[in-house]
Length: 459
Image 1 (spheres, rainbow, N blue to C red):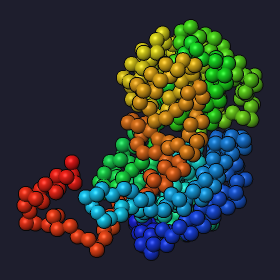
Image 2: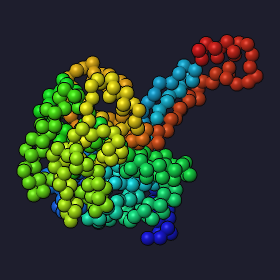
Image 3: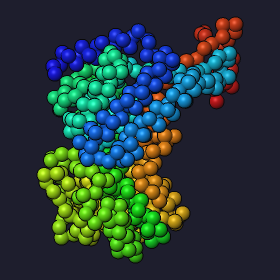
Image 4: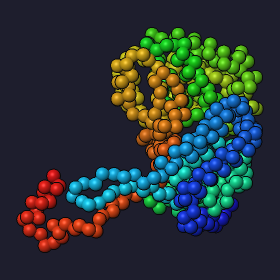
């Protein structure tokens, strides 16, 4: 795929955008309904593609990918008219007689670069927001998930004109070529390392960006937590997609008085979810490819494994693995795990945890299991992170009424629901002035009386 092809592709989308057809509200709703129809038609193909790429079960695929996308489309169609309506704002007396409104308008041609870990949802979800705002979209899927990417490309090509929405496949060379083009907005989901490259490319053209990145998201369990429920929710959140989730609890910080109890409960929960022979469980996915299998399996310290630790290279299988007595110098604590490894560290006082976390890069998520309201409030007030849960994991991102995004090293910007619409819209402020009155004090030459008048108006 040559640079010239990509340049022509972007130019065709820009020319189409300038016809203003995508700005029409009825058009936007119609296209979103078409997208819903497309997903429903391709559901079986998507099940198959995600199973081939991850060995994902149908339930997990629908729960974490297809179902969430369909719900977002439904919600967006229902509320889009209200979101798109110009918003009236108060006008200061100094500008009498005027009205002030904010108009939401699309940026133009946007680039959505999606990751491999949730290759359908994290492609379609930002596309929904871009469509709702009235943009044209170039989608770049991940080469690590060839089966799912192929289905997405075929689905989009069947239902949408490439001058409106198109899917581009390929590796780093295609990423580089795309980032060299002039887009009006870039939405990237991936690692902080690549996020810096995307931001640098955007800066060259003064293109705004949203970066959905990652990091080591802590899971704190203090001495007041309900250990049995905490274990169930931690294991569910950690092992969905075999831990290949940007907001998975990366490691556990357990209070020293409950750590051993928690570890034992975690072991019981894993077995209850996946059976004694986890390798044969139809509900436990695989690592996406050999490269990531080698990376994840290489983080296992056999001397600290208290559960699991099994790997099968030919199948990219890494079992749920609990490692106890982990320290910050261990390999597993030096990078985001993105796999089913569960390092457990202990703490004594919550103030020490707060100080520790504030000394590290801001994570995408934080989870705190506790019934101590004072401690909960301390963590909420004093630790900065993208988002999270108290007494649960992952589910904050499933609330379409709240923005999802990172902060600092874990990203910038947010989306979901109305926040997706806002992300892909420029909000244009317009003041409309009446012609029947014109205050002479605003015009020169000025005198002391004019100064007194302006002092009264602008205090």
